[in-house]
Length: 281
Ligand SMILES: [Zn+2]
Ligand SMILES: [Zn+2]
Image (cartoon, rainbow, N blue to C red; front, top):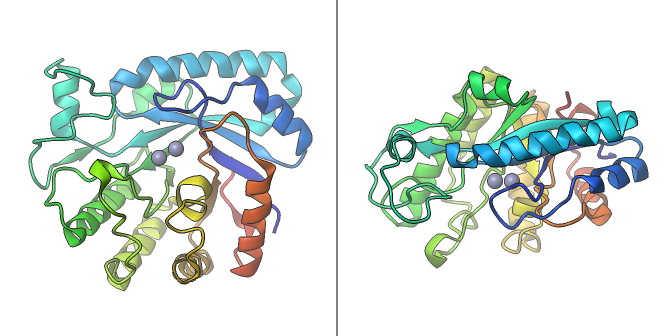
């Protein structure tokens, strides 16, 4: 079950700690002749437009410098599910302090959602695909069940949005305000919820991301065999039901570690997940 693609890679242009330089892609593409890679820097609001513009410029320079890799590297973005309330405020400059990650406090409960991307933006930066990520809850009560329900609402929005091609890192937990991961308690994520996710992916024909660094190899999940059985057993089932899967390392480091792919291949073998059917462009 060889991995032949990785569509979730951040470069140093992302607004967080990501630090991979474009030239590194040449080495990765040379060393693994059968792999296709995708760049996906962060877009939370239009404040990151400059990051996407910088990344696109470097992407074009990379392709001009290494024409032999032209067909094996793609340009995408990772867009966050945001509230319309905060995006409106950011667009009008009605905020104070650092809003790199949006306005995380005091928004309306059950806030209408929005993505910081549209067709015009995609065209402007020749964006080939969009990964949509749920990165935080939008102004809900801070108890485990409320968090699970809020994330679920955002996941469905991510899948249904016409700009989304791939839903990122299902059940990744952002340790906001030091709160404990609520998704390790698998009883909180009901079968009905997972079924709704599966049906939405099928109905809207969107890909489900199998995420390495943020989910499968994260400290909360990597040694938790019961959780991995529950999660990857279900991933196997939804693939069998016709959901397209996409591989994302979610690399934020300087290099793509070949051990990630090796470890992931072992997991896919074990859970009978077919990499031949993974999302590609
Ligand atoms: Zn993400
Ligand atoms: Zn990411």
